[in-house]
Length: 231
Image 1 (cartoon, rainbow, N blue to C red):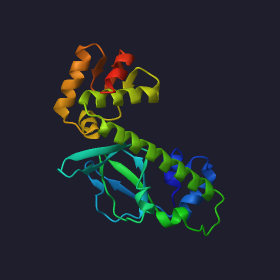
Image 2 (tube, one colour):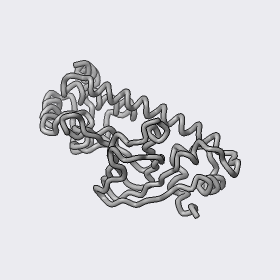
Image 3 (tube, rainbow, N blue to C red):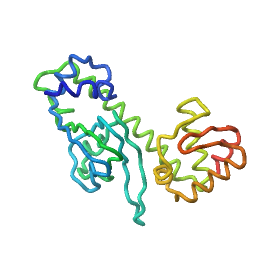
């Protein structure tokens, strides 16, 4: 029944270490639901009751929420293979605190939470690996959220931009980087206005610290950027 999705889910971190021939058996055991969404559709809306873990099989989506002033803040960008709802699904609060919106045509596989941690009626030998992968993903997400808090606590726009660019450099090990977010998404993610961010990026370019075109950036002076990230 779920054989046609094997190619898409085989590279998902949640199923890492599970042989492909066992993966189809596991999917039949988990009984997921697959849904398609058009661009700008809401996959999950903040305040919805949520009892599943979502896996983005195709497309990209943003996770965002509104602050007390009604301003939209982008928490993260989801790409193919990413999961969402893993924390809420197993908390005592069953309402989703953020909104997940499709940025293009998306295909999402929803796993019922009870099937992930419940007793497996087929006694699948790979169920333990699934749970270990799940815990690893939650740990990584906690680290990411801590980093998000770090950005928000920085006082200056320049400090936020420089810290974000340096983090992308640390991830890739390359001074030439492609940002995973477009300008609007990045401004929302850093909780600053798009015009203010663009203006500060222009200053960094004029000072010879960076070069950029659209989402492509070249970091020209790492030491100076590091000093700016402390502002």
